Image (cartoon, rainbow, N blue to C red; front, side, top):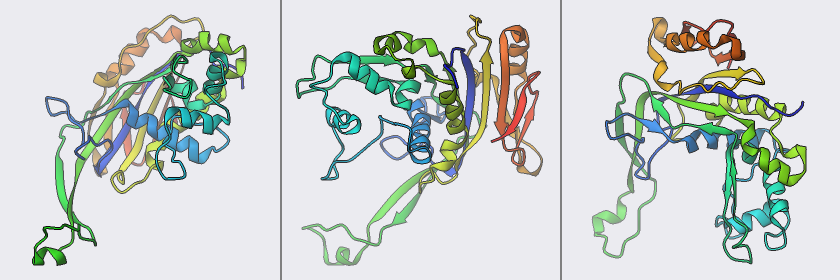
Length: 313
């Protein structure tokens, strides 16, 4: 497959049932000041990185937590040196850029590379990623968060513990969202890394058609694939993808506020895309293709845009 040169827009819906898709530092699902539940862009990006790293081990994923022999996270310099089998100190900026762009997650999301120490302080690099993802907003009518106590089989030792505490197990707490449907808007503009690709003098550093195919796969499978205790019940629900024609200058708005969800028959969730359909009808001459991926057994789509091809997620 060749270089990807078109722009694209779309949205990803992540379903969370009795789960915690993206917790804050207190363990609660994140909420906006008005109480709306949301998730950061980092949550969705993590599922993409995690999926590719595990399912496509031949692909390089750089921005991912790795541990040294003492089970401590690498510093940025240590991670770079270990991952690329080289040294930041010895590499010039051109080499560093080329190495970074050899990682698929950097070709997607860009990178802020600001190494400290080891003679690397003057090698700061910023790569503007082609794939920009917005925070995910829960569009379900209710955002009920609940907490429950959990018991550990172990006790916490304490010098001041009383005799009755010595036989008590540790109690903890976990919080979950009863039901949520998070919508992440995204855009893809391969021109964002054109200048960096020129620096490397290597077209292999550019975003490719193969990269985009893999991105779409990870965006429709990554959240379901990552199945931890807290995220059990968090699944990919919809991927909607709009690719523009090569010379189009069209800029599409955020889709999040255009999508409505309700409860249908047999407990299906019904997504109404009427406003999205109206918008895309206006610009149909500038659109190359429209695709939607979803599970028809669980999801019903109303007002599908004209010419949209349907696929199983």
